[in-house]
Length: 178
Image 1 (cartoon, rainbow, N blue to C red):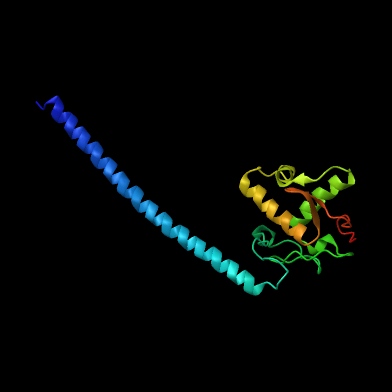
Image 2 (image 1 turned 45 degrees about the vertical axis):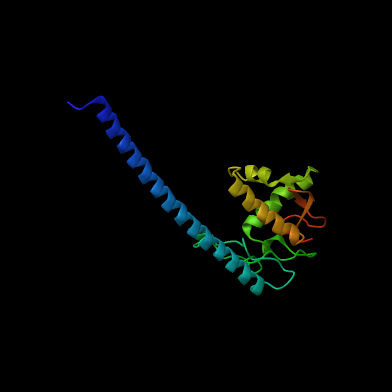
């Protein structure tokens, strides 16, 4: 019959072997993660460089432009002056209709237009996410913030306080132009 000390030593050795194996696997995963992060950073840098070359000075970045919704493939054709997928947000000017913007941007303007009509204050992107029925998780909120900041940069929205957005002065209701 084996001794108690002998059994304990066997269990200890087995546990030590398992710990060593898991440490080796963790080290391998850490090394793989480091390589993947470097590759990802290189792609981010490459995209920024391409943006810098392709986007005229003063116009802004194309990063985060709209991607076409595959579910809308069989829908009715868009009006001639509506925004096409991957189009940039045009700089606002008097008389420019909302239809030049993609649906996502029009939706933001519509929400803020309603608040403007009711003389309510500006909204945060988290409040917009909730209004749109989205989960107020960082990914959704940041996507809205990116769109709102782009609208601010192009003159469609104003940001009276950091992170709070409202229609810019002179921007009229949907489809009306200004």
